Length: 357
Image (cartoon, rainbow, N blue to C red; front, side, top):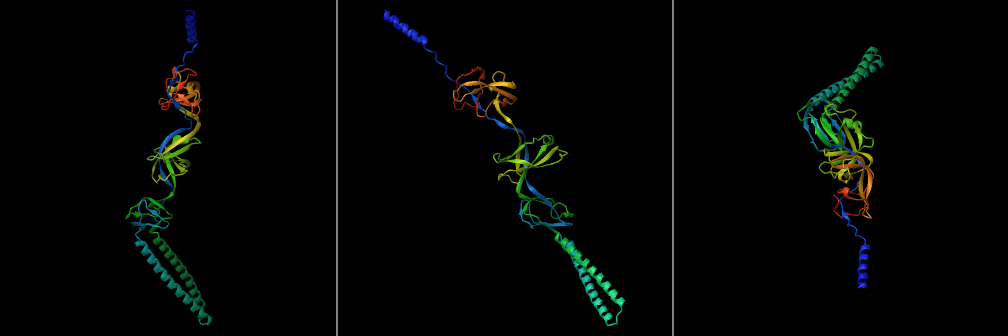
């Protein structure tokens, strides 16, 4: 009997000395911090254009007889683009050539007369006055011949101006006049571009341009293929805003234009600026008041011990159910995103795969 009581007492003491079992780790939802040091200023639509573009026209008046190339055609330097009706210029050239022929005949006759008068005077049968008149006539006829030849050269130039040729190798992007249309000298007829050097062109609001950050960066991507993208820097900025739209045109030099950036391609231009690192969290990650700004607290998961620890952060602002955090978190840290008010300091949690929203 005594032995039985001792055995029961030993069992009771052993049961009392056994520590209570720790609660199982609590599964939690979490987000991984992704720090971002770039602030989006705005996104705007633009287009890809050639840097070098010129619009040319005829150097003489006339009616366009033919357009020899179409929009989109690639042409070489000196390629015939269009011609004017050359009838007037041909008639002018024929008339100038006739005048030049008559002037040359008059000059040749004056030369012969001057030699004859000089010979007669040498033999003593001529008069000095006749020789002087012959020499004056020779000089006058020579001047007339020079004028006639200059007029012929000008007429040839005018005839050549009836042909419009490209000044460089490029692509035709636009015609400004049709066949049969009468054009004036210098009037715009066709636009040529050099497609080798491309740039993005975008119109930005004037008030945004005036406060454009000095470290502004532009990311250019194709609207139909957003994965095709590159960066751009400001090459040219319009000095004044458009009176109707109150926008100013920017031309951006592209670092490396993707092959899909054809002339005329619509692109999306994202304007960003360098800022202090910041990250986004769901508002539900805040302990206590989920609408607070400024100082706030969150639970950060220790990846080794799987314990949660309070962390002081700085909430800059709220946006669409999220908070922008300006400090207190490092890139790659895990923050509990739900059920935060029921956790305790140092509590062990379970972060299974797939628990990140």
